[in-house]
Length: 450
Image 1 (cartoon, rainbow, N blue to C red):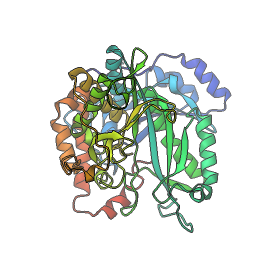
Image 2: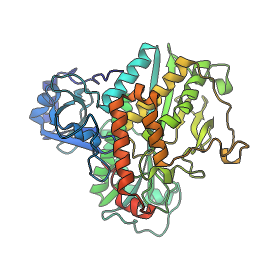
Image 3: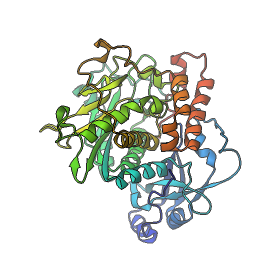
Image 4: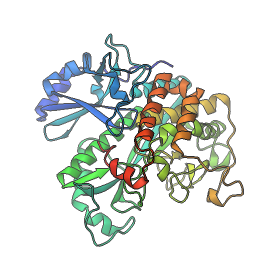
């Protein structure tokens, strides 16, 4: 599968530049996400917007294999030589703060061809394959994060009430500012609330096309960081901010249709799931072993992906089952977006473009091969007769070996990207070998903060 362009060059840059200048924008930032889940950027004066779109800004191929500790994990195709062009997608550019605009960017070769190393372009290519097959995916995201003091400590407070009004009101200045900032940037969050873990909050983003969803997730993390800084706070998107605390998730939701008809409702299967919808769910489950190194491959991910944490630590599906890797949400009056599936294993150390590509590629594989829908696990998988057969093994070495050996991953993501992801995660493993979770959690608390 060839990487494809994801929109750069489609909109007249001069008119966009003029509008941003009239809005008081002086600095324009374009971002890309590396294989370890870190966000990097190039910033230019707003007058340089046309050049950022048409020619792009120079960026070493090694940008893709920067590691969580700022190391670089070179591969057979990514070394010290060569250069790429980071080209801005002006269709997504918007003002995000006083004097500041943002837009997503994609990697291209010097001659203008899309780079096979580009995770955003890879996602666009997978979406194109679904569209060619007559499928129309929409995706949403839930982003969990933990607020800390500026020096990375716990916030002073009398206590913490999970999902509580007191937890929200203690940070109401930050949350009101965050809501207004999101709305001004066009993100339109659906929910913002205190979560279970201490100082933990969640933002839910609405359904969008997959590339738009991934772009929005990147921007949301940037804005959360900007607003937190304004309020004298720091924010952690680590899968495990505190070794003895709750982990952060980055759950992905998918709805899927064909010819304007939903595949997860209106059928004859359980909860109205159609035959193709069942194959889509089966594909997600069948691809878990192949892609867990994408969804949750960091050195901290295994500590979050455990039974009892509602992280989806069992390779099964179930209606509203928060212990299942795939949680099914049925069509009902209480679900205005219609039936969808939630992949719960994903955490914030992920490259969101690659996670979405892996999920959609797995879904398409399930549909094309006609995989049957497995039996539902209706309760806690840990209480089922076949436990621990359904238990996910989150060991980092295991999931990376599975990713490296996966022919499915090679087809969907391309061999260069698979090699790069494995390299950056093995760098993490070597860096923190023999160290306890407390030390790793402290060292990486802000590794994935945009």
